[in-house]
Image (cartoon, rainbow, N blue to C red; front, side):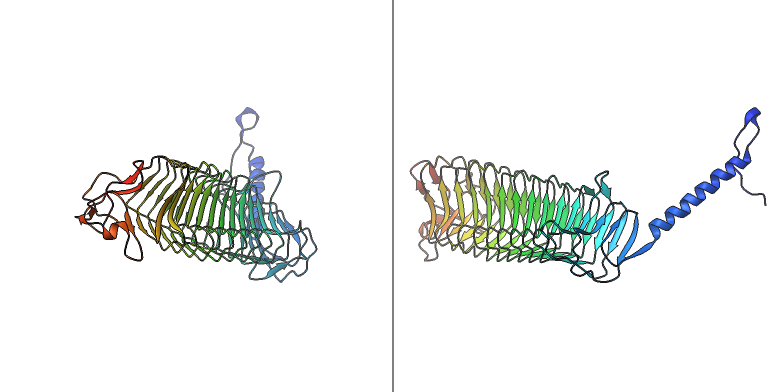
Length: 426
């Protein structure tokens, strides 16, 4: 069989086959070298810089390292597998256990997994990184943040634990957009469990956020279009979920129990957020849901708010918010407290508190019912219109007023003619 040849034309149209063979040999050598590098498995035994793509395996614990950065990754297409070993520092405030960053380029396709990181300033930092993963990592007892994403987008942080760090457990900041944080545990941290700051379009779902000294999950300034879904928030010393100067977020299907301050707080010009299908139980100091200070056009529906220390819902200096299909019961003070607000809508809610509602100063006209409808109401009756007003002692308006087909025969006058439920549920 004749060897395969690539022919090139020389002067006069004659082929220079020798030059072609040299080119082929160079290409073969390049492919062989690239394959060797990217497919190689490299052992790490101490502080190092990873500057070549490939798979790197931690071969042993690294203990009491004084390096400013223990492992720095500056190349794309890197897998760092800790194999369950630990990278331990000496609590240097500016030190970093693992840093993924290259000032000359955006890194991509970097995977950091199966490693324990402790006693650094920051446990793991992904800076200017895309399409990468932090997986099955434990970041604990760092003086600052456990796992941090800075200017990093379309990454996944999953199945990891950030606990007992001095700062935030998991933080996304400085335009870290379109990331997924799922299936993690953030607990016992000195600041928030999870914080998103100046970052948007992130999915925060199915995380356990517990016993942090400040807030459970904090959407902190210009963090828009994020989704917080199916998280469990328990025992946090601040709010379970707080939204500050952030718009158009979806907070849904979260289980919020035994947090200290507010279950879900939305404030300071936070507009167009959706709060839906959450269960909020035993807020020990204040309110179940608080919306205030020019936070307008938010939708609050299908939530259960039970046993808030003060108010089930607190609405102040915020307008055009809509509340429907919510159950608010056994609040320590009032089910609903309104102050300096107007043009809000409350329909098909189930209020069951010793005192269901207080209208303080500056409350304008709000809507308390829609037109009578044959659609089944929140009480399960055959008609809907307004809200159910019950009390644990059995003397609530909806309990003592005669009714026809699930609607009370008289309107419930909350305050003069400006706030009247014309079709209260029975």
